[in-house]
Amino acid sequence: MKYMDFYLQRRRIAVARSYVPNGATLLDIGSADGVLFETLSTHILRGIGIDPDITEQVTIGNYTLMHGTVPDTQFPAASFDCITMLAVLEHIPRDAQQQLVEYCSACLKPGGRVIITVPSPLVDAILVVLQWLRVIDAMSLHQHYGFLPSETHALFCAPHFRLIRHQRFQLGLNNLFVFEKC
Image 1 (tube, rainbow, N blue to C red):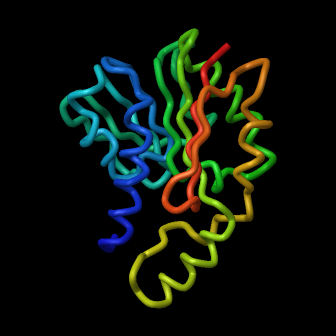
Image 2: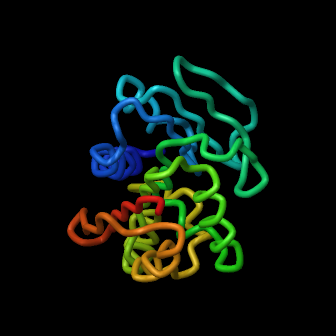
């Protein structure tokens, strides 16, 4: 990854961090290299990161990174206080999104949180230009299909979750959603 990729990733983490409860058990869907856990290691009790690109399971301190996809990676019901999906939802095919919501609901404890970041559609065009200029690597950009941030609320609405926070950041080009399990 290039510097700009790291910067954008760190900014998403910084915005999401304040919504992760102190001492939480955390599932990070789409964890990539585990930088979220490096940032939150003293803030959380334990974490598990799943990502289809992880080839070997590794445990570092209080977190484990493992190969996995939703819904194939199963955990006992109500295993987590918090689930994060930072720049992930726009990669999930539409026909798998409802299953993702149900998976999150099953994995979370009552009152648990789902923290999501979703870029605005304009970001894809910006990323293509930045990738062409070799400023970023734009990992998995080819998987974006035009998911709209406005679809997030309807997807994660009742009966499973209630929206407790939506905010735009990075000049309005990114969106944070925080849902609480009903």
